[in-house]
Amino acid sequence: MAPRAIKWVCNGALWGFICCAVALTIKASPQQRRPAPKPRVDYSRFSHLTGEHRTACKSCHTFPSKNWKQVRKGDDAFPDVTEYPEHQACLGCHRQQFFARERPAPRICSNCHVKPTPVETSRNVFPSLGEAFLTTARARDFVSDFRVLFPHDKHTDASCEDCHQTYQAQGKSDDEFATKPPKEIGDGFWLKKGTFKTRPLTHAGCFTCHNQESELPPLPFTCDSCHKPPAPATRAADFDQKLIGTMGIQDWWTLTAWRGRTSAGAFRHEVHSDLKCAQCHQGVTMNDPVPVKSCGGAEGCHVTATADDGGILNYEIDQRNKNNGFVCTKCHVVLGSKPVPATHVNAITKPAK
Image (cartoon, rainbow, N blue to C red):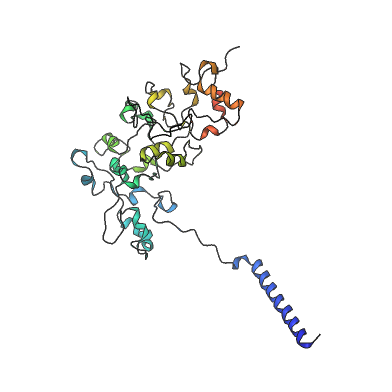
């Protein structure tokens, strides 16, 4: 072999050896690799559930807000938290985000401001104002970071109707659906009017008794006595996000009530108005899921000894036993395709032999 060819071979072998050595070094030294980028924080979406935000309510919120006499007029006004925190509450931790070079304004400003620009200072309506907030576009996708823990057992002298009314009742109208359904709906599910019950939207009813003059605890400024972070979800909701788009449902009340249903998403309160709430909602707190046995009742309404006695639960379980692909649609929206739970089977009283 010519000397020049030998030189090329040697140089090639040497270069290959160096490349392999470098590759092995990089592979053997993972600490030298470039660290993966941290997920970008969306500062336009404030959450109370973020670790750094799990502080005392009074560290950001002032009770009462300065504008409480302006946002509710005359006799409707009462001391309340009716406004977002002042800038000082945020600047201590988020100075970098407040002075970020973002146009037309830093993204963090949109948490409170309608149109975050240097000249537009108006703020979004605070959720505690109830109807005034629900009429805004911001309300449609609003999901509170908290769950209100109301002790029903301590308010037994009150009537359920004081706080809960049938929402969008059908009444004597022939139009039973919340929105216009397809012409050939058949057994398909479509949300009907009078399905849900309302609940208090503001502090007005609560502060009638719980206020500084009565000194009846919990007092208004002890927010975390009632507003608690939600517990980890242990039950799937009988709710289909895609379906609401198909139905064209947009009002906040329906979406909020429906998202929280973890059992019979299609249950309609209006057609059961002759029943007392405690016949189905049991327990001292009345916040627990409704047991399926309550659907039988003394009259054996929907749960009977046999399907021949008219119980819809009996019928649908019989259909599932015959056909594993059968979907229960009488009460359920999504859960009807799931395996039949033991609670449903055990709710049927076996006829005496």
